[in-house]
Image (cartoon, rainbow, N blue to C red; front, side):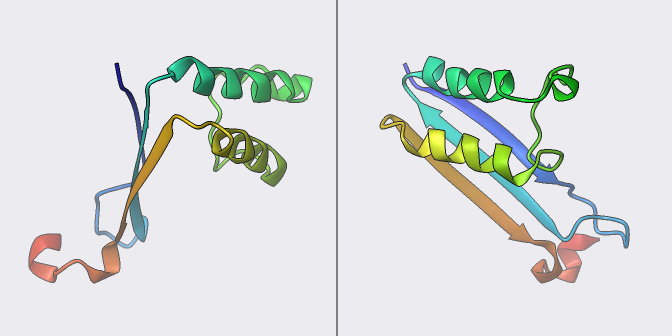
Length: 97
């Protein structure tokens, strides 16, 4: 059975304080345990002060942690990653309102 992991980054607003991009990422796999193990291994390798954090967020993580996760995920053979990237500056004004 295929498992789906979905996450978004950015916001859907169009005010001056809103993000410039909205990104939707979808990960498809038949072996979700292997993805979970990558995250657990990475979390175990963090310094003690970061282990209290229950979720890993790329925005808050350092470059080494992000690269470690991506390098481990790329080694998995049963994984598909899809990204939808919206440059909100290119959205028609009619749709922004």
